[in-house]
Image (tube, rainbow, N blue to C red; front, side, top):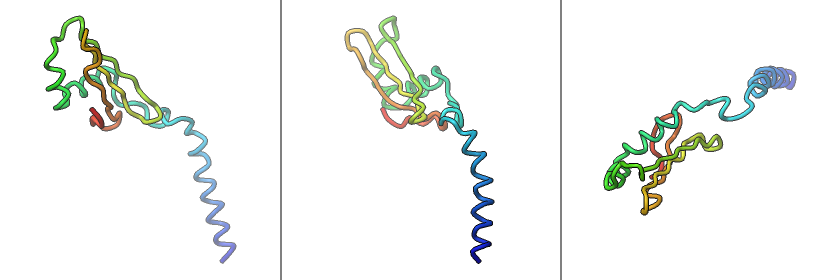
Length: 102
């Protein structure tokens, strides 16, 4: 029985080591499926964000920014408007496109 267990452990190690060696970073394994523009569009169309941001004119004072976070594998989206400053902040999952916070 101990010999059989040793064979299973050795075979498992051979299978797992190459897979681990190729996985250098989370973003290399799962590259973002969304673009900056796509994440921003999804965030702005999300129910309560759309309702709130719709109160502000989409003029030159309307500014958006989206940044990909490789640790959390999501996008942080921020929206500013002129004197009001930041009017919306949230996160969008890069694999599903789901707004996870707003």
